[in-house]
Image 1 (cartoon, rainbow, N blue to C red):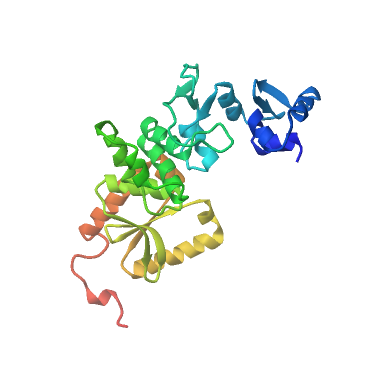
Image 2 (cartoon, rainbow, N blue to C red; image 1 turned 45 degrees about the vertical axis):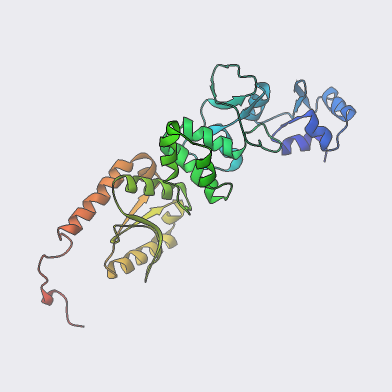
Length: 289
């Protein structure tokens, strides 16, 4: 592998030490700079022609990307673009347009200027709105990058009490950020929620609310004709078993959660007062079997 391809494999930037450890000599690096194939960002850091801008910014600041700015490097779920750069800088000097975080206490990314996943999540929990931090933590747990007990042990004392409450919302399993968000919204509304429940005749459902209402959280694939037909048959099976079903999509869960929760509460209240069936059963409504 030549030096240009190696840099591209490192998102376009690497330190001298990284290059030397990869087998490139100082003369090879100098020749690549002289030939214009590689740029010298500053002392000890070299870049390819089109490096990742966040990686370059972190090297320039002698810092580590963290919080929401580091999410994509660990394939963590996020609810928005990172916006301003979030950095933990070794110099501690304030820089305009940068959200500064404290020192990193755990091993960083092996070759990129990115904080370790533990520091990324601790910073996110202390910096971001609750649900934005929650989906990042859930994603890390779902990938088995760490466990919540480890994070909880790193967040002691009264000042971290609210943050530890966020960790209580992390699920043992979540296949999408919609699941952890819906669970959080329903739980905070005082509802009893079980996730990934195997319902006889239906199969596994995303949420079972108050043991009587199925809530399915549908992604883009659920709009495909085959999946729509399958979902409708599942709805029918649920109805035969006495369970109502509601479906919600990304926009509902992420951008309109109050409306979603309100609709769920309305359906549960209607069921409670018998609006889905007459108060007294009239046997002639259904022909004898």
